[in-house]
Length: 161
Image (cartoon, rainbow, N blue to C red):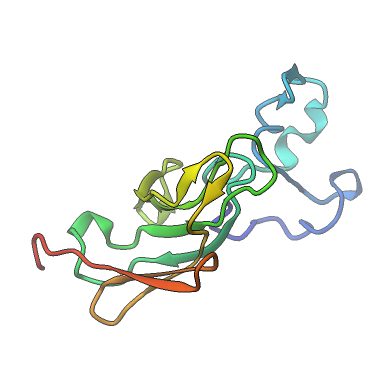
């Protein structure tokens, strides 16, 4: 998940043509299907835009929202919520949840945590596939999902600011 726009001017060009390369993050770490490729292309090292947050492959983050409300705890302010639509072609499902990405000093910390889960019944059946996330005017989180066409409203009743 790349949250901030790339900083180099030629990011749409191949690295060999003077642009910078963007990738999954796994390749930048030298991990590719169990093959250690670290050090094979040292010339590309400074041309890689590493994702701000590394997510499981096939999680399919379709919608994100920065939390601008005041209903949730204060440390949620400015954090990112992402709808993980999920895999459909894996033997073990991944995604199918809402994650929270903490942001400090205007940048993602690189970590994420599960925020809303339970959409997977088993590895062959799900009842929900999150698509979109939005912050309602009262600070509640709205989540749409396309398996049943439902919009979920997530509220917080703890400490009110």
